[in-house]
Image (cartoon, rainbow, N blue to C red; front, side):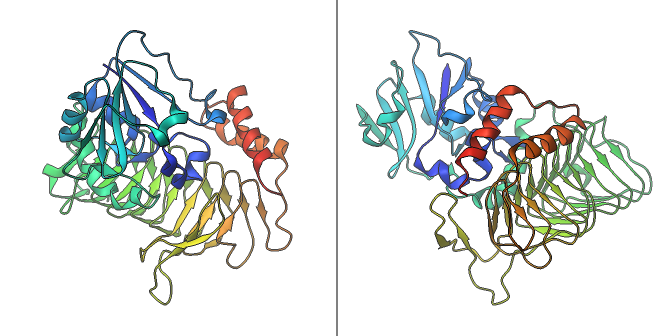
Length: 395
């Protein structure tokens, strides 16, 4: 079986996170969307269609000729029931939930330019709504349940191991600690409301408190006395301290010091300076409004709690205060006193005065310096992608 991820018009709702990655590379729970499908469906081949500027960084294999392909919406999270419905599709069939195209099967290469006018030979309606993410904050509302379901997917999931006698563990049957993980003295692990997952080579420093459902992924570090509340994912290679609640950090991002982060999502290679705080609730307890990344129009999210969504490589200085419903692009540098704007373009220096545009050569230099610290390289393809994002940024 071969599958291909496609992107529909609603995939734009995940920018700025998807300025630098396809939607299927978003992390929710322990795994990315791609990894979930890979583990549940175990296809022979996975290919994808994505935006032009991402194709050199995320190079897709070629489809196997003369074999049918199952095309799957990048926004859909797998379940046993949905996989059964998808594998039952015959060539020419398409699976919908109301007006949302979930999946289709075709013996021919599908033309994604015709997606909006696509008419299947047989249209099949799902009776139950699948797990379908529509807005960026859906990643947060579903994160806790996805941590739990991802643990079931991990056949090699870590099991609870003996810890220092000073480590306090509540509900050990719901604790998953990889044998290579390091748990320092005085750590508190509370799994009463959901699992605590600590992955390969992760480090939980002394005095930290983890309250499940929570996922600390491979090679991540929770710093001294860090407090990680339920619904949070600390991605691979991240270093996180202070207080974090219901938030997602993609890989290699840092928040190593005190400060509060709540109901927020950070891409890769972000760095939050000491005492950076995110507000996630308005003083009047009203619904949070944010700006659409493409139209720049403000709209009501319909939710009361939402903090910050920040694209890759953006950074804050010490004592930064991010307002409720802040959207920040790629490679922004925020260091003004007081509250910065709630909409921050990519490659902007937020100094509270002129907010000048970041020079491309300096932005690339900063990326190379940070990535080198983790033995990662800025490839020519990656640099080309970043340059494209720099060029399309509005002056």
